[in-house]
Image 1 (tube, rainbow, N blue to C red):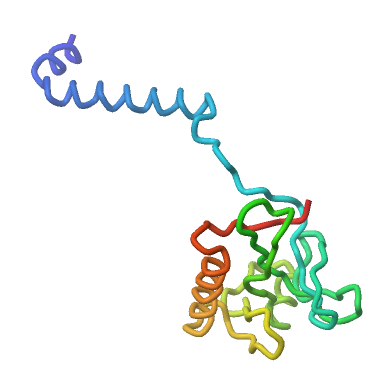
Image 2: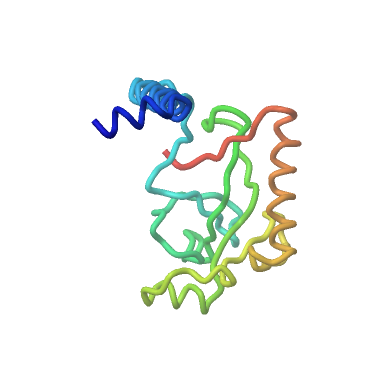
Length: 163
């Protein structure tokens, strides 16, 4: 009876709790019915890689630690590939990623990735690799997003993965 007495003596708290539980219940119901599923990004167990020697995309397992050996024998790095709509047409490379030799060796040895060893560059030939978490790396990431939005002319760019 102590709980009932407390509830009767605290009507504002009781009402707030009841409304909160109702909102949570409705949210769970909507989530389980699939309302929030909408258009989900397509993913796969592969990434697009970019053959630095042949300057072409190829698909490889997402578990590989870049740089890897590309089909041409050159260096293969992860490519962030985008499209303006359906990923089956009009794809373009936004940014390239790889690990420094020391970071790759550490990851292969079982250590977690060191953010300082994550390198990025633009897909243009001669672009310089810079640490992703550096001011230059952040500038490149922002420039890649801006270039993707400009390329899509107002439509939202979509990240693409190999089928």
